[in-house]
Each structure stands twice: as C-alpha cells, then as structure tokens.
Image (cartoon, rainbow, N blue to C red; front, side, top):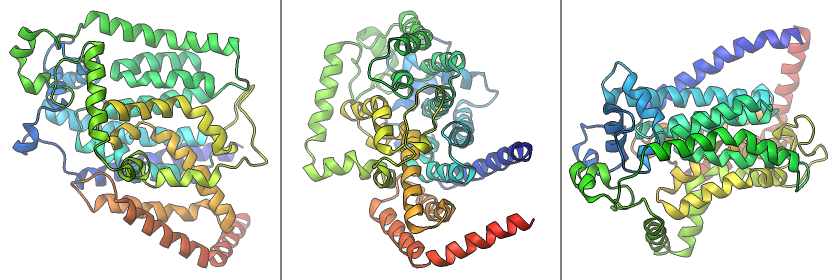
Length: 427
C-alpha cells in the first residue's frame, strides 16, 4: 500500500507533463480566432462581448446571457497581458487542468486503474469539441466551465459536499450550465426512487449556487430590450442569437427555439439523426454500447461509494440522464451541435471506458492496447488545423482497422502481457 501511494506523486507529474504536451501540440495545430483574421473577427459573435467585459468594470455590461458569465472575463482582466493574449493563455491553462483533473477523477473517484484513467485522458484529447474547439475560440467561459465540471464530479463521487457546494457556487458565475450538475447529486447517489433525506441534502448543496445565480441576475439586469443601450453598443456587442438582440423575455426565448427548430428541420431526417449521434459525438457515441448489459459485479451506489468502473452503462445512463438531457435540450435552443454535446464529455468518457473494457475482455487483452488506437484519433485532430471534429468515416474506419489488428494478433498481445507480468514479479 505504501509503495503504491509513493508512486502517485510521480504519476501526477507524468500526467501534468503529458497534458501540457498534448495541449501544446493542439495549440500549434489549431487555427485560433484572432484579430489578424479580419473577416472572421468582424462577425458579431461572443468574442466581442467577452473581450468588452474583460476591459470594462465588473457588471457594466448588460447584454445577456454573456453579461451573467462574469468570472472568466473578470479573471482575464486581472492578468498583466493584452486581453486577447490573456484569453488564449487561460484557455490553454484550463484545457490542461481539465485533463489532469479528469485523470484524477477517473482514477481516484470513478474507480479506474491508472492505465484506464490514462486511456480516458487520451479519449479527452482525441475528442476535438472538448479540447480543440476551446483553443480555437478561447474567449468563451467553456474552458473554465469544463474544469469546474470535472472538479464538481470528483467532489460528488467522493461525497465532499461542502467543497462541492463551493465549486457549484463558483461555477454558476463562470457559466449557468453548471446547474446541470445539481440533479446528479441525487441520481448518482440514490439507491431507490424516492429518498427524502438525499433530496434535502441535494437542496442544501445546491442552495449556495442557486443563491449566487439569482444574485448575479439581480445585480446585473439585462438590457437587451432597451433600444438606447443597444444602439449605443452596436451589433457586434448586442447580437446574441441568430442575429437577434432581444433575448431577455420568454417570448424572445420561445422565438429563438422556433428559429432553431426551423433550421434543424430543414435538414433531412438522416442528417438530423447524424447530428444527434455520431456526427457530433463521434466514437464516444459508439463505444458505450459495448457495455450496456449489466455485469455480475454491478451494484448501485448506496451507502459509501461505488465507482463507475463497477457499473454497467445501462445503470450509468439512468444516473447521468438529467445532465445528458440538459445537453440535448441545448440542441433545441442553439446551433453548433458539437459544442452543445461537448459539455457531457466526462460522462461520455466514463461510458466509453466501460465499453473499451468489455471489448478488451472479449479479445483477451489488456485495455492498455487501446491507447495507441485513440492516440491515432488524436493525431487525426492534429492534421486539420481549421476543423475540430474528425470526420466520422475516417475515425470509424481507423478504429475498425485497429480492432481487426488487435483481434488478429491478440495471442501475441497476450504473450507480451504474460512476459510483462513475469518481469514485474521478478523485479
């Protein structure tokens, strides 16, 4: 036990170094939105809003929803760097930090061995919408909100409720989507449908976050419907949804949903299905299906802590359902489907790791042999600086070829496994 613990700091250093290298390579091979690209920069997208917020006093911007996402612009404004550079730096830092924390969450909280946790880390970097997209557009609060999400899940799994309450309260100041974590406090821990005690505990943990969310929206009113204010700022700072500005009342919100749905349903049914599945999520949509059937070791999450590594994906899907449903709802109110589903990346990776483990058991090999398979997916991301999602036909073809090789040479891999174990026993 002592020897295992003594290795852990060394693992952390290696993981930090690995994440830093993987993030740096992505940054080098990603075309980041920059003022030098005058055509793209001139579009009235959110980068104008967040740069304005970082360069002006806290609470002085009143176009929602960006005006309520105050934490990242405030922190960027404190950095002794030009605003654009500061946003790029914070995005790289948060993408790297998310990778490190994801490894720790998978290993220390979700119950995966270090090899499987490292495989989960590779899945994270191979999933372009969760990493490369954030580097491509570093001005949004998404990099920080992804870090907050993984921290919250770590605390949730390990039942550190005081710290979880603090993280959720900080998270809603980064981005309001942090509230999607709140129902998971109940669904991940419950061992029966109705549990009043757990429901009250969930409410107590959620209360600080909801209070912060309400306070921010009370102190920073939205002026989307105030014509004088809107005309003073201009379209680049006020257009927030498909070219419209007025987004601060229920009627405008419902109109936005109708506009999005009209656009969505102009597509053919097969393209809608593609957009909702592998077209936006890639292989992380396919892999979980390999572990849907409950295993003999499956049990719920009752008294203390049962890791996700011991649960079937059918059970985990039920426990993750509120969060996944919230991400799906985002598809109805906004475009950029890959960005909407990317927020679910920790859950997709957990489900995918279980699928990979099932595949490895069926092949009679260790899960570590899948690491090169998904490093190849990461390399595909490096080959295309202008896009953030690997075409699914390329990703699927490469995966099937690698799976065929693993199947063909599984005896060789099993022999290497035995030789490796014997060597460890001798040493």
